[in-house]
Amino acid sequence: MSLELDLDLQVATTAAGLPAHADFADWVAAAVAERRARCELTIRLVDADESQALNAQYRGVDRPTNVLSFPFELPPGVDSTDPVADYLGDLVICPEVVRREALEQGKQDAAHWAHMVVHGVLHLFDYDHITDEQAAEMEGLETTILSRLGFPPPYEDDPPTEDP
Image (cartoon, rainbow, N blue to C red; front, side, top):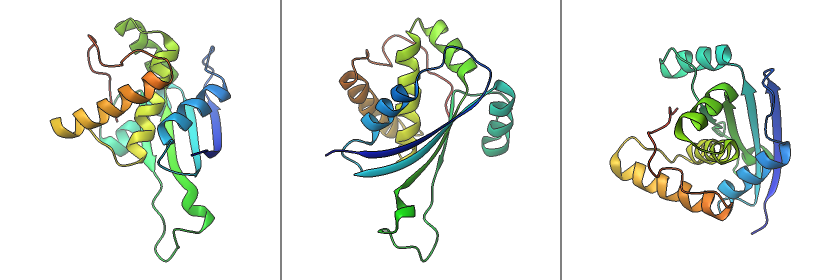
């Protein structure tokens, strides 16, 4: 199935060396593949202060985090065939945390960026990792998707990343 993707990439950080829009689009498309024919999504890249404020507000955790996922909920009375139903949600990613984790875990930046995008998108599809069973399912999907993108398995011999 071919995906029609509308990706709004918002850069609200002065961090250098960010992945290209096309990279983000490829990573999103891989995570969305076979789940939707059309998808709209916003990815906002933020500094540590904004990440920490959002993490504290929405998760009660007063520190910056790698990725936060905000799924879109269809308003009552709106039919699922309405174009607004194509909106998947928002991801907020902190490059500072992603880079630090990649370094600490001995991963290539691109591999960890791809993992954070795939991980966040799967959260938008209601995948989670609260229980061991949920974690096994989500981590298996992430590994499969990242493998298709040419990246190594994200969970081999590394500590768990911060998570939304």
